[in-house]
Image 1 (cartoon, rainbow, N blue to C red):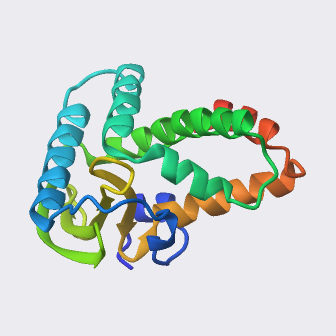
Image 2: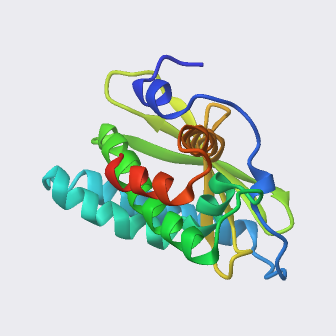
Length: 200
């Protein structure tokens, strides 16, 4: 793995994240549509980070960005896990807290992309309606590294459900973070949500 500070801080484990997606009716997303979605996501990401705004302003925009391009409900419920004993209301509260946590945490990390060049390198189908769109990121003064966007329309429209950087899955990393919090708080989902509201 290349010695990128973004890599070191964001991603701690490797694996495929295909298991996150719950079976839903097929909507026949194409490779071209997946690539177009990622191109748009990259363009808007670069517009935010190169805007020159304050961190507070940028974090507000990142929350809207993640809500638009990321399948936050799927990511949140994967992170929480199906076996956790939680009511529907507790799961919704966790999802809201997780969305804010993700936008703050990765919004701050993405500021490292200021002045970066991100080039699409290709796309491949993972399974029905799931694609991985690969890109190369070039940061100033650092060696290029690979960033892959995993996208699907199985939640109703095209969205990202994972980021893979040099083989390491954001989805799996955050899933482990939440599992550690569940152990810490004795499987109390409400307390985990409270923690996430202050984290990131």
